[in-house]
Image 1 (cartoon, one colour):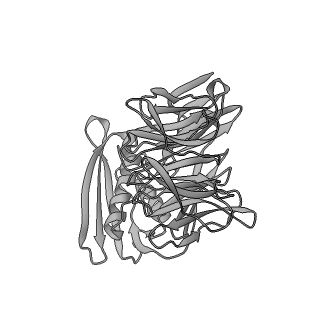
Image 2 (cartoon, rainbow, N blue to C red):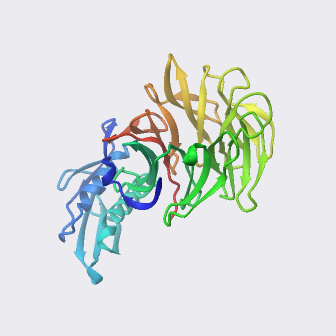
Image 3 (tube, rainbow, N blue to C red):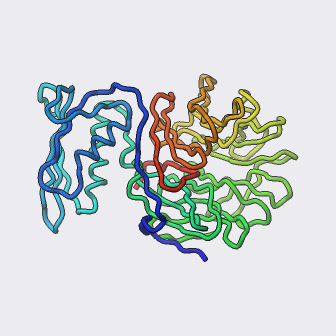
Length: 388
């Protein structure tokens, strides 16, 4: 039996707290409590969001700091709240002064929005506090597709199934998830609207249906099919439901992901061990991308197309590594173990992954780490794009 729809994750007995393992330092910023009696600790959420970036160091109100945040959350019309905040420099010069009229259930999202505004003002980079993640959890004979805030809070089950779920992938607009489901005890690829719960099967070919990935314009899905005997890469036009085969040969070709120019990176053992290759939008000759070690797989592409993160095996341990396509520099980011399933944040600065049980994020340079501590497990995490 399968259930779907947005719901609380409390019944699944899995919650997420976020801890961090980052170097000391960062831009000092004093954050005062928000007056007004709002039920959410807005200042605490902002401080937590900013500290997780590893680039900003929140301090108590009144501390000597380069910047200061103050604010109010007063009851407003229609039983909502008016949230005001100010960001000032050390000499009191105002840098941001904004207000928001929000419903009570939007206090946490507006705190994330304020965090991102502050982060962008101080660093020039887009923040991640207001983004979302999706992941697969399991327990009690059920599998769950979960969507949560980027800090791990507000987890919502959008699908519960008695059969395995795997390989979720966000659409470019953040409104849909494609994933593999074993309903009927056979793999099929499903696209689900995150908000309405509406679902449709887009591939249920005989054999393997695996590893869906959205094209940059959201009009096509690449995935792996073995309907012709060997696992190959196909691209499906979602409007016409017409699949086009992009690879051919005796090797295993799988795990396709799109680059912004429409070309595709995928995993293949055609060279004798799993490595990453690239083909053009219509297929053709494949270019090998990785040469470090005897195992590089599960690629993910940064939003700007410059970096490819992957699972890299070294000394019998599986690590998250990244390849710079411009400089060809290859960097191992994690200490390794059973690391798997990397996914870039929409600003390209962080990579979320799983160690088979726990979700963790690491920065592109390996210096900042965030651990998502679960009572339960989490696998196949994917960071949502900026969107609605």
